[in-house]
Length: 259
Length: 314
Image (tube, rainbow over all chains, first blue to last red; front, top):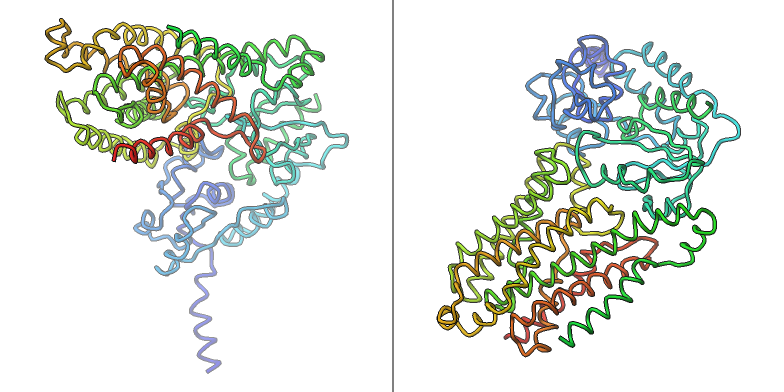
């Protein structure tokens, strides 16, 4: 009986070898997959991951198949590994039912969880060395949180902002900025004018696309903020998933803040 | 005339309250930085108050004109489809054609006109209440479904969030540019509607009587449809869809003007402006730390009123 189990285990080992055809189903798993996969290993990314308006790594997805986050989109590509992160909760289950190995990357709540996700994705791809290098690069880009941080407000279109105790704020802390507490996660232009922060960081999203939120960022009242309010700009794309591609943007922001 | 004067006088304190809302904050900002307080008043409060007055007037006037034209107490832009049509047009223009503010306004107006044209074509000239409301409900449902279809085909996931919030209607954080866009369009279309007062009063006596009194009913119909569509579209493009003002206001006003539809136009415009300005002040009272959405509040007031109308008409 034990011999049979050992034999089965032996037969099952090929699944542990590096997968050759990897499909990533969500924007946030694309972030890790595009960062870590060996050339040719990735066969499909989500359409958002391949969209330069959504993903900072979109250039790396050029020429890859694009899926809409469903297993049915990629099953014809015969993937041997499916990466998911958020999105349709049924996708992972249906991939498993089809006998495809699935690795789910949970939404990180801490910086340690981002590192763990990098390692988890690296192990799943058989790219442990690349993952360790990526973690090292991530930590190098973040650097130590600067002393004497400045009170700041990170807002994107429509006045949406981030929680002062969330992961995004933890990243911001490494740029030398402390996110102000804002009730209910959004700030009105009136509030902003009545009580301006020391540093205002605006993040744009789909800058080419007209939207109410976009026109909020272009409101003349924002331009009329007093000169003592320092204005910084950040790439809105990397704040969606709060994954490894945010680290270089934090390094850039830290340099600007220190200037 | 005295009613108009009274309503206009009511607008003064409402507009002042809207402009100088939360005076402690205003004073504190002015003490710290006068230029900033000026910006706050000019760039944020002025457009907000101005849009509340202008769009409120357009909703009240549009409702009164449609109720007069269709001789139907249930007629109003948000019940019979043009509001949904405007939403659809604006969503298509803004999110799929990638247009700017002007394109969104044009899309809103085109959508509203299309919905109204469809309504008149479906219901026929002298439609009965049931036919008209049925056709309106069908058009609203179709428009709503198409908006949802558009949302599920949206180019980006955030567009969904954006459109949903916009459809709830709000006047917060609007700009002078948006006021400068909506106000002239609404003023011109509103002027055209107000000029139809005598013709609407004649129409109230019946189409044949109106024709003998020299009113071209067909032309009157088209004038009111086009002007209402243009007004609704311009308002929706800037403020999202704000329901029920157009339905409620003419009912409040009509008993005061001897039930004459033409005489109800001016007071409806003024009362609409007053009601929307008041509603926009009310949403600024913080509930659970969050500003309410204007369209939500007007629906909360308007829907029970609508039900009361239904019960009374039973």
